[in-house]
Image (tube, rainbow, N blue to C red):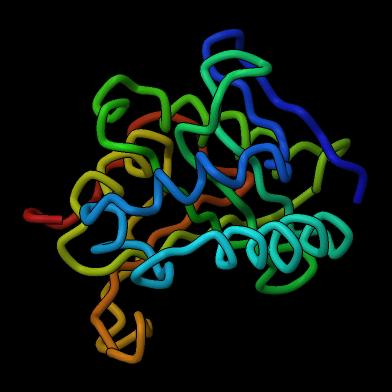
Length: 189
């Protein structure tokens, strides 16, 4: 798959590069990020290098794009967002954002751009984009709910994080689902 840059002129999504390694390492030191994301703890430079090689470079080649979220086209990384294949017409979305930029609608904008690209027949032509998050990750649930993801349930011990099985919430958006706020989520999620 050819790398694609996405932007709405408020956020810019571009593949992270070797020039971003130090910033990625710095971002991944945040304990609130490590609580919800399946990154190594402690997170070192070699982890960022491995991420760039295995997930970014190989990912784009295998139709699994990863973008760095930036506030300007050439700005520093403040978050990450990716699509990983479940099969040829369904992917799973994953993302993180540094604390100082949360609650500003930036990740919601990034998710909109990625979903638009994912569902576009000239983009990835996906039928489904799924989301999983560990139970209790209310900010992640809120942002996907604002972006049209419908709650699908609870996977008991459904995900592994650093050797520990944890319950996870499931939601998805189909290409035929409208964007915008999704009703039907249970109270407390």
